[in-house]
Length: 303
Image (cartoon, rainbow, N blue to C red; front, side, top):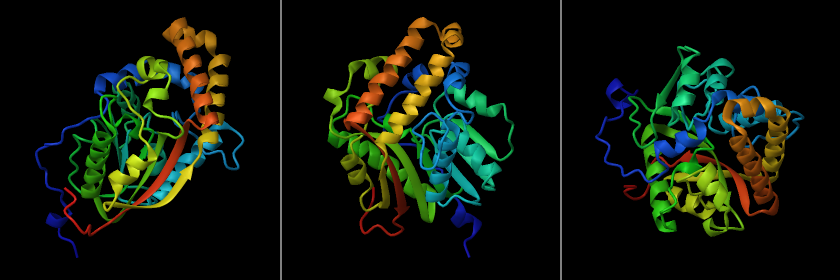
């Protein structure tokens, strides 16, 4: 039987050199306006690719996506679950309300998102304005979920080898935080038949500054002998459908959106959705959903 001392995670000083997008870059995009995002997202406020299997509406497809990740992470009825890049809290709320999780912890670098979730005053939800590199949990997690955040874990100045190092730091941290046999369910956009040099500069400068997408090979290399990848889904066509739904909603509420953020911003998002749809449809971009299981006894020093 584990003792309380064994259940604790040492609160070590943070010596990690974080190499992802800055808090300022994250807030530039996600703190635009909570009300603006509400206009074109579904009622769960999920801002990532939906799962359209046997789903007719955007809300149904987003709930299927949430349930998929909760199941793949083995988070049902867990004691302690972490959501890295929690957005507006859709996973956190579903974990505690539908899946009877005792405590759900969410990390975000967006002040607007933290403020949004804090208004719920939910005793089982703990949302923190911090990145994964700063996070220091007191007890291990049963499961970790991260949807649409991995895209921001490496900045645009890094070489491929440096990106792998940055991602490996992330996986090392997750390994330290998880209980034996713990799982991560990860969703991220990746470069497929393209590279950073091929991506429209409008997206990298005007929409998501300071963020470099990963390649699947970089993720696999970074996780090697720390986590076992047991399920991989590529769902790029589902992102085309998700983006089409967002664009339809935005255009249906265009006048109100302009009142909230201005004509220039609305036009920028319409352009962003259109460029992204082409990227996913052509296969230049892909959408990966990756299930990883903690290797409890790595056969080398993972540090």
